[in-house]
Length: 116
Image (cartoon, rainbow, N blue to C red; front, side, top):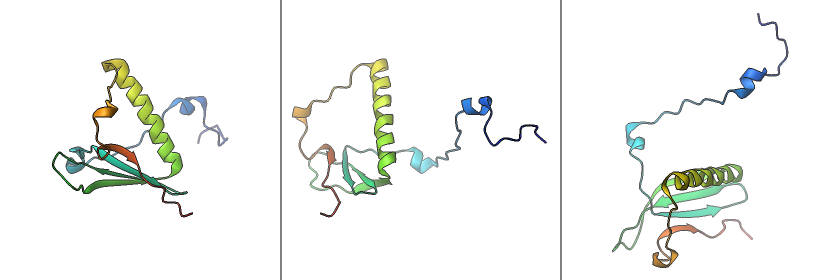
């Protein structure tokens, strides 16, 4: 029996990051290419629809939909910002030429799903 009877973790366990076993099957590991994301939100969730559109195509099918809480959406945005900063630190600035992209291409904020 451990002599420490408190419910507080000791200083060593506070230093250890939480390790989660994430499983990745071969089909999912291949990934899904997306050049369009439509983002909607309601008071309780954010919905991210990922699709792709190539020249000459008139429509696009949603290939993945991610639904998350507003808190997780904000954490995702922060994680993306940190990863982009690290990428640019290692590889140089990512150039985004806004003028060359069609209004139909890229990543968009859709209408708010909240009913008014």
